[in-house]
Structure formats: structure tokens, C-alpha cells
Image (cartoon, rainbow, N blue to C red; front, side):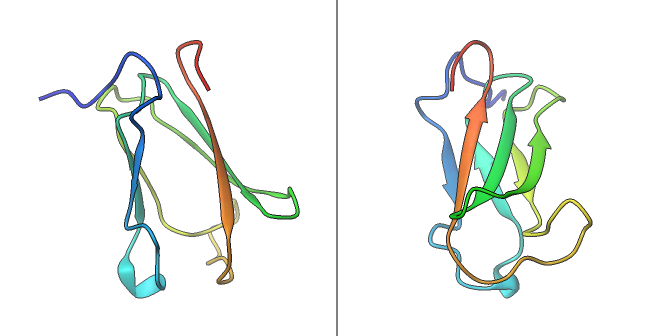
Length: 86
């Protein structure tokens, strides 16, 4: 069953709230095909870019930065673009 959507109105992330690295990765579902997720600190610094490219409508973030290092506890913002939507 395909999980892709025509727009990003129904994107879901879980677990939310995320408690610790013991929770495993954070999953993003109901994405459009070829979606891009950019994760930022609340100061606006880019932490990680993740792309949905296989067409299944979901990706995971291993709660790490672009260098593969675990990120600190805190609040992170994400911005998703895909198929003419954001």
C-alpha cells in the first residue's frame, strides 16, 4: 500500500514528542513523492537534510546531524517541500 500523498497537508511525525535517543529514529509519513525535509535548530541553523526518493511516502531521521553525530536534546523545526507544496 503506497503511503504517498498528493500534498503535504497530512504529514505525520512520530514519536512526537520525542523523548530521547532510546526512542529510535523519528519517522515522517504521508509525504509526497520526492519530498525534501530540512531540520533546523530554533536558532535557524540547518542540522540535517533528508529526502524521500523511493516513492513510499516515508523517511526516518536518526536524530543526527549531517556528519552522522547525535544531536543535543532540544526543540527542532522541520520544513518540508515536495510536489509544489510546502
